[in-house]
Amino acid sequence: MRILHVLDHSIPLHSGYTFRTAAILREQRALGWETHHLTSPKQGVTQASVEEVDGLRFHRSEVPPPGPPGINEWRLIQATERRLDALARELKPDLIHAHSPVLNAIPAIRVGRRLGIPVVYEIRAFWEDAAVDHGTTSEGSLRYRATRALETWAIKRVDHVFTICEGLRRDIVERGIPESRITVIPNAVDIENFQMSAPDAGTEALRRKVGLEGCTVLGFVGSFYAYEGLDLLLDAFAGLAAARPDLRVLLVGGGPQDANLKAQAARLGLADRVIFTGRVPHSEVSRYYDLIDLLAYPRHSMRLTELVTPLKPLEAMAQGHLFVASDVGGHKELIRDGETGRLFAAGNPQALAAAVTDMLDHRERWPAMRQAGRSFVEDVRNWKNSVANYRRVYAGLVPGKTA
Image (cartoon, rainbow, N blue to C red; front, side, top):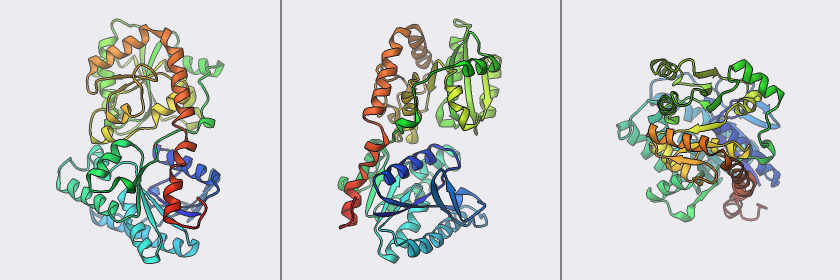
Protein backbone atom coordinates (compact mmCIF):
# COMPACT_ATOMS: atom_id res chain seq x y z
CA MET A 1 0.00 0.00 0.00
CA ARG A 2 1.55 3.30 -1.11
CA ILE A 3 -0.05 6.41 0.42
CA LEU A 4 0.70 10.02 -0.53
CA HIS A 5 -0.21 12.36 2.34
CA VAL A 6 -0.94 16.05 1.69
CA LEU A 7 -0.31 18.19 4.77
CA ASP A 8 -0.65 21.82 5.82
CA HIS A 9 2.75 21.79 7.58
CA SER A 10 5.01 19.29 9.34
CA ILE A 11 7.95 18.81 11.62
CA PRO A 12 10.44 20.40 12.27
CA LEU A 13 7.69 22.94 13.04
CA HIS A 14 6.11 22.20 16.42
CA SER A 15 2.33 22.10 16.83
CA GLY A 16 -0.38 19.63 17.77
CA TYR A 17 -0.92 19.22 14.01
CA THR A 18 2.68 18.21 13.30
CA PHE A 19 2.92 15.88 16.31
CA ARG A 20 -0.30 14.07 15.32
CA THR A 21 0.97 13.77 11.75
CA ALA A 22 4.33 12.33 12.75
CA ALA A 23 2.68 9.77 15.04
CA ILE A 24 0.27 8.65 12.31
CA LEU A 25 3.03 8.31 9.72
CA ARG A 26 5.27 6.26 12.00
CA GLU A 27 2.45 3.92 12.99
CA GLN A 28 1.36 3.46 9.38
CA ARG A 29 4.93 2.53 8.48
CA ALA A 30 5.00 0.08 11.39
CA LEU A 31 2.03 -1.62 9.70
CA GLY A 32 4.15 -2.07 6.58
CA TRP A 33 2.60 0.72 4.50
CA GLU A 34 4.75 2.92 2.30
CA THR A 35 4.07 6.58 3.07
CA HIS A 36 5.12 9.73 1.18
CA HIS A 37 4.48 13.25 2.39
CA LEU A 38 3.86 16.63 0.75
CA THR A 39 3.48 19.88 2.69
CA SER A 40 1.62 22.92 1.39
CA PRO A 41 3.25 26.34 0.90
CA LYS A 42 2.21 27.16 4.47
CA GLN A 43 5.27 25.23 5.62
CA GLY A 44 7.13 28.36 4.55
CA VAL A 45 10.31 28.73 2.56
CA THR A 46 12.61 25.73 3.09
CA GLN A 47 16.25 25.13 2.22
CA ALA A 48 15.45 22.24 -0.10
CA SER A 49 12.48 20.85 -2.04
CA VAL A 50 12.84 17.57 -0.11
CA GLU A 51 13.78 17.41 3.59
CA GLU A 52 14.51 14.53 5.95
CA VAL A 53 13.20 15.15 9.47
CA ASP A 54 13.35 12.51 12.22
CA GLY A 55 13.46 9.68 9.68
CA LEU A 56 10.56 11.03 7.59
CA ARG A 57 11.01 12.54 4.12
CA PHE A 58 8.88 15.57 3.30
CA HIS A 59 8.40 17.04 -0.17
CA ARG A 60 7.92 20.80 0.00
CA SER A 61 5.73 23.04 -2.16
CA GLU A 62 6.89 26.30 -3.67
CA VAL A 63 5.73 29.38 -1.74
CA PRO A 64 3.83 31.73 -4.09
CA PRO A 65 3.85 35.53 -3.68
CA PRO A 66 1.18 36.68 -1.22
CA GLY A 67 -1.98 38.32 -2.45
CA PRO A 68 -5.25 39.76 -1.14
CA PRO A 69 -7.77 37.42 0.55
CA GLY A 70 -9.19 34.97 -1.93
CA ILE A 71 -6.35 35.43 -4.41
CA ASN A 72 -3.85 34.32 -1.76
CA GLU A 73 -5.75 31.10 -1.01
CA TRP A 74 -6.15 30.35 -4.72
CA ARG A 75 -2.39 30.71 -5.20
CA LEU A 76 -1.79 28.30 -2.31
CA ILE A 77 -4.15 25.75 -3.88
CA GLN A 78 -2.48 26.08 -7.27
CA ALA A 79 1.04 25.71 -5.85
CA THR A 80 0.03 22.60 -3.89
CA GLU A 81 -1.71 21.12 -6.92
CA ARG A 82 1.31 21.59 -9.20
CA ARG A 83 3.63 19.86 -6.74
CA LEU A 84 1.10 17.12 -5.95
CA ASP A 85 0.46 16.36 -9.61
CA ALA A 86 4.17 15.95 -10.33
CA LEU A 87 4.68 13.77 -7.24
CA ALA A 88 1.66 11.58 -7.95
CA ARG A 89 2.85 10.94 -11.49
CA GLU A 90 6.31 10.04 -10.18
CA LEU A 91 5.33 7.95 -7.13
CA LYS A 92 2.11 6.38 -8.50
CA PRO A 93 0.42 6.13 -5.07
CA ASP A 94 -2.50 3.81 -4.45
CA LEU A 95 -4.21 6.52 -2.42
CA ILE A 96 -4.01 10.28 -1.83
CA HIS A 97 -4.69 11.19 1.79
CA ALA A 98 -5.32 14.93 2.28
CA HIS A 99 -5.35 16.47 5.74
CA SER A 100 -6.98 19.72 6.91
CA PRO A 101 -7.53 22.40 5.80
CA VAL A 102 -9.71 22.29 2.69
CA LEU A 103 -6.91 24.10 0.83
CA ASN A 104 -5.24 20.67 0.71
CA ALA A 105 -8.39 18.72 -0.12
CA ILE A 106 -9.16 20.70 -3.27
CA PRO A 107 -5.84 19.98 -5.05
CA ALA A 108 -6.04 16.35 -3.88
CA ILE A 109 -9.50 15.97 -5.42
CA ARG A 110 -8.40 17.58 -8.69
CA VAL A 111 -5.24 15.48 -9.00
CA GLY A 112 -7.01 12.31 -7.89
CA ARG A 113 -9.70 12.70 -10.53
CA ARG A 114 -7.16 13.53 -13.20
CA LEU A 115 -5.02 10.46 -12.48
CA GLY A 116 -7.70 8.03 -11.33
CA ILE A 117 -6.44 7.79 -7.72
CA PRO A 118 -8.84 7.44 -4.73
CA VAL A 119 -8.81 10.43 -2.38
CA VAL A 120 -9.59 10.55 1.35
CA TYR A 121 -9.81 13.72 3.43
CA GLU A 122 -8.97 13.90 7.14
CA ILE A 123 -10.59 16.79 9.00
CA ARG A 124 -8.92 17.90 12.23
CA ALA A 125 -10.90 21.13 12.51
CA PHE A 126 -13.04 23.13 10.13
CA TRP A 127 -11.20 25.96 8.40
CA GLU A 128 -14.05 28.42 8.99
CA ASP A 129 -13.98 27.83 12.77
CA ALA A 130 -10.21 28.23 12.93
CA ALA A 131 -10.58 31.56 11.09
CA VAL A 132 -13.04 32.77 13.74
CA ASP A 133 -10.56 32.05 16.51
CA HIS A 134 -7.76 33.77 14.60
CA GLY A 135 -9.92 36.86 14.30
CA THR A 136 -9.95 36.89 10.49
CA THR A 137 -13.72 36.44 10.28
CA SER A 138 -16.82 36.05 12.47
CA GLU A 139 -19.28 33.21 12.73
CA GLY A 140 -22.05 33.63 10.17
CA SER A 141 -20.17 36.20 8.06
CA LEU A 142 -20.09 35.97 4.26
CA ARG A 143 -16.54 34.62 4.41
CA TYR A 144 -17.53 32.10 7.08
CA ARG A 145 -20.47 30.82 5.03
CA ALA A 146 -18.38 30.64 1.86
CA THR A 147 -15.62 28.70 3.61
CA ARG A 148 -18.13 26.34 5.19
CA ALA A 149 -19.68 25.73 1.76
CA LEU A 150 -16.23 24.96 0.35
CA GLU A 151 -15.56 22.39 3.11
CA THR A 152 -18.93 20.77 2.44
CA TRP A 153 -18.22 20.72 -1.31
CA ALA A 154 -14.94 18.88 -0.64
CA ILE A 155 -16.27 16.25 1.77
CA LYS A 156 -19.03 15.37 -0.68
CA ARG A 157 -16.48 14.65 -3.41
CA VAL A 158 -13.83 12.56 -1.67
CA ASP A 159 -14.07 8.78 -1.42
CA HIS A 160 -14.02 8.76 2.38
CA VAL A 161 -13.80 11.23 5.26
CA PHE A 162 -11.67 10.72 8.35
CA THR A 163 -11.93 12.95 11.39
CA ILE A 164 -10.47 13.10 14.88
CA CYS A 165 -13.48 12.97 17.20
CA GLU A 166 -17.20 12.42 17.62
CA GLY A 167 -18.02 16.15 17.69
CA LEU A 168 -16.64 16.66 14.19
CA ARG A 169 -18.17 13.38 12.99
CA ARG A 170 -21.64 14.56 14.01
CA ASP A 171 -21.15 17.87 12.22
CA ILE A 172 -20.08 16.06 9.04
CA VAL A 173 -23.16 13.82 9.19
CA GLU A 174 -25.34 16.94 9.50
CA ARG A 175 -23.86 18.13 6.20
CA GLY A 176 -25.40 15.18 4.43
CA ILE A 177 -22.53 12.68 4.47
CA PRO A 178 -23.58 9.06 5.16
CA GLU A 179 -22.14 7.63 8.37
CA SER A 180 -20.68 4.75 6.36
CA ARG A 181 -18.33 7.22 4.64
CA ILE A 182 -16.94 8.69 7.87
CA THR A 183 -14.36 7.11 10.19
CA VAL A 184 -12.99 8.56 13.43
CA ILE A 185 -9.22 8.35 13.99
CA PRO A 186 -9.06 9.56 17.62
CA ASN A 187 -6.28 11.71 18.98
CA ALA A 188 -3.87 9.56 20.97
CA VAL A 189 -0.35 9.43 22.37
CA ASP A 190 2.73 7.35 21.68
CA ILE A 191 3.14 5.67 25.05
CA GLU A 192 6.84 4.97 24.47
CA ASN A 193 7.51 8.71 24.22
CA PHE A 194 5.87 9.56 27.54
CA GLN A 195 7.03 8.36 30.93
CA MET A 196 5.42 9.02 34.28
CA SER A 197 6.68 12.28 35.73
CA ALA A 198 9.78 11.88 37.91
CA PRO A 199 11.19 15.21 39.18
CA ASP A 200 14.92 15.10 39.92
CA ALA A 201 17.78 17.41 40.88
CA GLY A 202 17.51 19.18 37.53
CA THR A 203 13.86 19.90 38.17
CA GLU A 204 14.66 21.39 41.58
CA ALA A 205 17.39 23.56 40.06
CA LEU A 206 14.88 24.89 37.52
CA ARG A 207 12.36 25.48 40.31
CA ARG A 208 14.90 27.69 42.08
CA LYS A 209 15.79 29.49 38.86
CA VAL A 210 12.15 30.29 38.08
CA GLY A 211 11.45 31.35 41.67
CA LEU A 212 8.95 28.66 42.65
CA GLU A 213 10.61 27.14 45.74
CA GLY A 214 8.03 26.32 48.40
CA CYS A 215 5.14 27.19 46.07
CA THR A 216 2.05 25.35 44.88
CA VAL A 217 1.88 25.83 41.13
CA LEU A 218 -1.03 26.03 38.70
CA GLY A 219 0.17 25.92 35.13
CA PHE A 220 -0.32 25.78 31.40
CA VAL A 221 2.17 24.73 28.73
CA GLY A 222 1.45 25.58 25.10
CA SER A 223 0.37 28.34 22.75
CA PHE A 224 -1.52 31.33 24.14
CA TYR A 225 -4.55 31.40 21.85
CA ALA A 226 -7.76 33.16 22.91
CA TYR A 227 -9.78 29.93 22.91
CA GLU A 228 -7.44 28.35 25.51
CA GLY A 229 -9.11 30.52 28.16
CA LEU A 230 -5.99 31.61 30.02
CA ASP A 231 -7.72 34.89 30.83
CA LEU A 232 -10.24 32.80 32.79
CA LEU A 233 -7.38 31.13 34.66
CA LEU A 234 -6.04 34.51 35.78
CA ASP A 235 -9.52 35.67 36.86
CA ALA A 236 -9.90 32.48 38.91
CA PHE A 237 -6.45 32.94 40.40
CA ALA A 238 -7.43 36.42 41.55
CA GLY A 239 -10.15 34.81 43.66
CA LEU A 240 -7.75 32.22 45.10
CA ALA A 241 -4.66 34.31 45.72
CA ALA A 242 -5.56 35.92 49.07
CA ALA A 243 -6.47 32.63 50.76
CA ARG A 244 -3.46 30.78 49.31
CA PRO A 245 -0.33 32.93 49.58
CA ASP A 246 1.86 30.05 48.36
CA LEU A 247 -0.07 29.68 45.10
CA ARG A 248 1.54 30.70 41.80
CA VAL A 249 0.59 30.48 38.11
CA LEU A 250 3.22 29.32 35.62
CA LEU A 251 2.54 30.00 31.94
CA VAL A 252 5.01 28.29 29.63
CA GLY A 253 4.94 29.27 25.97
CA GLY A 254 3.72 32.25 24.01
CA GLY A 255 1.34 33.36 21.32
CA PRO A 256 -1.20 35.98 20.27
CA GLN A 257 -2.56 36.54 23.80
CA ASP A 258 0.83 36.99 25.47
CA ALA A 259 0.66 40.78 25.88
CA ASN A 260 -3.00 40.72 26.92
CA LEU A 261 -2.32 38.14 29.62
CA LYS A 262 0.62 40.09 31.04
CA ALA A 263 -1.50 43.24 31.13
CA GLN A 264 -4.33 41.33 32.85
CA ALA A 265 -1.96 39.95 35.50
CA ALA A 266 -0.70 43.47 36.20
CA ARG A 267 -4.24 44.89 36.32
CA LEU A 268 -5.26 42.21 38.85
CA GLY A 269 -2.21 42.98 41.01
CA LEU A 270 -0.78 39.51 40.38
CA ALA A 271 2.23 40.31 38.20
CA ASP A 272 4.66 39.03 40.85
CA ARG A 273 2.75 35.75 41.21
CA VAL A 274 2.21 34.90 37.54
CA ILE A 275 5.41 33.68 35.88
CA PHE A 276 5.74 33.90 32.10
CA THR A 277 8.67 31.83 30.85
CA GLY A 278 8.30 32.60 27.15
CA ARG A 279 8.79 29.79 24.66
CA VAL A 280 11.20 27.09 25.83
CA PRO A 281 13.15 24.46 23.83
CA HIS A 282 11.09 21.35 23.15
CA SER A 283 13.71 19.24 24.91
CA GLU A 284 13.10 21.22 28.13
CA VAL A 285 9.30 21.11 28.14
CA SER A 286 9.06 18.05 30.39
CA ARG A 287 11.14 19.83 33.04
CA TYR A 288 8.63 22.67 33.13
CA TYR A 289 5.73 20.23 33.35
CA ASP A 290 7.37 18.77 36.46
CA LEU A 291 7.24 22.17 38.18
CA ILE A 292 3.45 22.21 37.96
CA ASP A 293 1.27 20.67 40.67
CA LEU A 294 -2.00 21.14 38.80
CA LEU A 295 -2.45 21.88 35.10
CA ALA A 296 -5.35 23.99 33.83
CA TYR A 297 -7.12 23.66 30.48
CA PRO A 298 -9.82 26.35 30.81
CA ARG A 299 -10.91 26.46 27.15
CA HIS A 300 -13.76 28.83 26.30
CA SER A 301 -16.90 27.37 24.76
CA MET A 302 -17.08 27.97 21.00
CA ARG A 303 -17.64 25.77 17.96
CA LEU A 304 -13.93 24.95 17.72
CA THR A 305 -13.58 23.77 21.33
CA GLU A 306 -16.98 22.08 21.48
CA LEU A 307 -16.24 20.00 18.39
CA VAL A 308 -12.50 19.33 18.52
CA THR A 309 -10.57 17.15 20.98
CA PRO A 310 -7.12 18.44 22.01
CA LEU A 311 -3.95 16.44 22.57
CA LYS A 312 -2.77 18.12 25.77
CA PRO A 313 -4.99 16.28 28.28
CA LEU A 314 -3.93 12.94 26.80
CA GLU A 315 -0.25 13.89 27.01
CA ALA A 316 -0.80 14.97 30.63
CA MET A 317 -2.42 11.63 31.47
CA ALA A 318 0.46 9.77 29.85
CA GLN A 319 2.91 11.55 32.16
CA GLY A 320 0.80 11.22 35.29
CA HIS A 321 0.04 14.94 35.50
CA LEU A 322 -3.20 16.13 37.08
CA PHE A 323 -5.45 18.81 35.64
CA VAL A 324 -8.71 20.70 35.76
CA ALA A 325 -10.47 21.37 32.44
CA SER A 326 -13.55 23.20 31.22
CA ASP A 327 -16.52 21.06 30.27
CA VAL A 328 -16.46 21.89 26.56
CA GLY A 329 -17.37 19.03 24.24
CA GLY A 330 -13.81 18.38 23.14
CA HIS A 331 -12.77 17.80 26.76
CA LYS A 332 -15.79 15.75 27.77
CA GLU A 333 -14.98 13.29 25.00
CA LEU A 334 -11.58 12.61 26.62
CA ILE A 335 -11.90 13.19 30.36
CA ARG A 336 -13.78 11.17 32.97
CA ASP A 337 -14.69 13.76 35.58
CA GLY A 338 -13.25 12.90 38.98
CA GLU A 339 -11.45 9.85 37.60
CA THR A 340 -8.86 10.97 35.01
CA GLY A 341 -9.26 14.72 35.54
CA ARG A 342 -11.64 17.31 36.91
CA LEU A 343 -14.18 19.21 34.78
CA PHE A 344 -15.73 22.61 35.59
CA ALA A 345 -18.36 24.82 33.93
CA ALA A 346 -16.77 26.56 30.94
CA GLY A 347 -16.51 30.34 31.13
CA ASN A 348 -17.04 30.45 34.91
CA PRO A 349 -13.99 31.61 36.93
CA GLN A 350 -15.70 30.76 40.22
CA ALA A 351 -16.29 27.19 39.02
CA LEU A 352 -12.64 26.96 37.97
CA ALA A 353 -11.50 28.28 41.35
CA ALA A 354 -13.75 25.76 43.13
CA ALA A 355 -12.35 22.88 41.06
CA VAL A 356 -8.78 23.96 41.83
CA THR A 357 -9.59 24.25 45.54
CA ASP A 358 -11.19 20.82 45.62
CA MET A 359 -8.18 19.24 43.90
CA LEU A 360 -5.64 20.95 46.16
CA ASP A 361 -7.61 20.10 49.30
CA HIS A 362 -7.85 16.39 48.44
CA ARG A 363 -4.40 15.30 47.43
CA GLU A 364 -5.11 11.83 48.75
CA ARG A 365 -7.06 11.24 45.50
CA TRP A 366 -4.11 12.10 43.30
CA PRO A 367 -2.36 8.71 43.07
CA ALA A 368 -5.51 6.97 41.87
CA MET A 369 -6.25 9.73 39.34
CA ARG A 370 -2.70 9.56 38.00
CA GLN A 371 -2.96 5.81 37.50
CA ALA A 372 -6.42 6.04 35.91
CA GLY A 373 -5.16 8.59 33.39
CA ARG A 374 -2.11 6.54 32.50
CA SER A 375 -4.22 3.38 32.10
CA PHE A 376 -6.64 5.22 29.80
CA VAL A 377 -3.93 6.19 27.32
CA GLU A 378 -2.17 2.83 27.58
CA ASP A 379 -5.30 0.79 26.97
CA VAL A 380 -7.49 3.07 24.83
CA ARG A 381 -5.95 6.27 23.47
CA ASN A 382 -2.71 5.04 21.93
CA TRP A 383 -1.68 5.47 18.30
CA LYS A 384 -1.63 1.75 17.55
CA ASN A 385 -5.35 1.56 18.33
CA SER A 386 -6.18 4.76 16.46
CA VAL A 387 -4.23 4.06 13.28
CA ALA A 388 -5.73 0.55 13.03
CA ASN A 389 -8.99 2.30 12.07
CA TYR A 390 -7.53 3.17 8.64
CA ARG A 391 -7.23 -0.50 7.65
CA ARG A 392 -10.79 -1.22 6.60
CA VAL A 393 -11.20 1.99 4.62
CA TYR A 394 -7.89 1.76 2.81
CA ALA A 395 -8.52 -1.89 1.91
CA GLY A 396 -11.97 -1.06 0.54
CA LEU A 397 -10.66 1.73 -1.67
CA VAL A 398 -7.65 -0.19 -2.99
CA PRO A 399 -8.78 -3.82 -3.51
CA GLY A 400 -6.01 -6.36 -3.78
CA LYS A 401 -3.54 -4.39 -1.68
CA THR A 402 -2.48 -5.59 1.75
CA ALA A 403 -3.88 -3.21 4.34
